[in-house]
Image 1 (cartoon, helix red, strand yellow):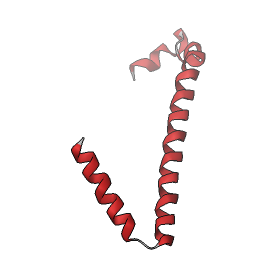
Image 2 (image 1 turned 180 degrees about the vertical axis):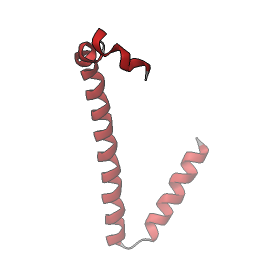
Image 3 (image 1 turned 90 degrees about the vertical axis):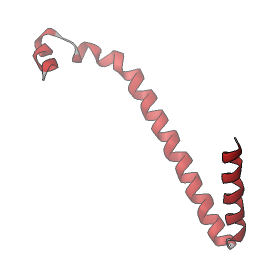
Length: 69
């Protein structure tokens, strides 16, 4: 974990050298990254939840020929 703590220390040092308006931009970017990751996780969960509902539509004898493509 030393590498992670070194990276954190380096990042904090760099943040400490920025003017307040730039720190605010960095904070906004971090918020964006967190939101994007949360959105991605929600979409993946929704996809997994929907798969059983679509199974009967996707897996049927009439469309079996497309499974080999």
